[in-house]
Image 1 (cartoon, rainbow, N blue to C red):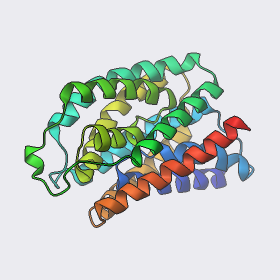
Image 2 (image 1 turned 30 degrees about the vertical axis):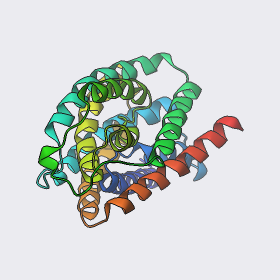
Image 3 (image 1 turned 90 degrees about the vertical axis):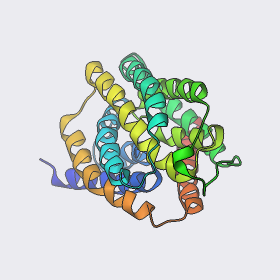
Length: 259
């Protein structure tokens, strides 16, 4: 067994999951390109886009579960939002996860790049959610939430990302959800979504056991740490961290696609 390869995967999983816990994403927004580009850059065997998306799906399941538990006592998770968006996103993510077996690597990478580009654009739109409101009295457009969750589920299931990196901007910009509620609730919605995408990837036959286990171990440790750090940071700073991650990924992926 190549221990250098294992250590590299642990490092990628830890860094990605630490950030995912901080900003309420499943980690794929940063770990997808890290898994795709870092191993071959350091001389290790490259993963295909199909393999990266499958590893990401399993890792997101455990990373969001761990991060969600870290947020559960803060009162930030909106149960109504999670139930409505979770019920439609899990179906969409299963369809996307299983359907990805019929798609090429280039199509999967392009899907990821389009998702990231949309998310980056939305992060710079004005947010109208009231950050200082009583979270127990939060209201939102339920049909709109269900519709966007289904669409996000399908396209994110294709890349194994579970959709948190676009779910958060949708919650902030379209549904007008306060930042901390969006971050915490997106972890729960993403966890539900990852159930569908993981099942779809398993049935599609692209799962790699050892890399998935390594990433899960790193995620279980790092995601709760990131969630605890998040509670001590200002909401505006969290938005900028997420925006910076999305923009940097968009630039890299699109440069590769276009060149």
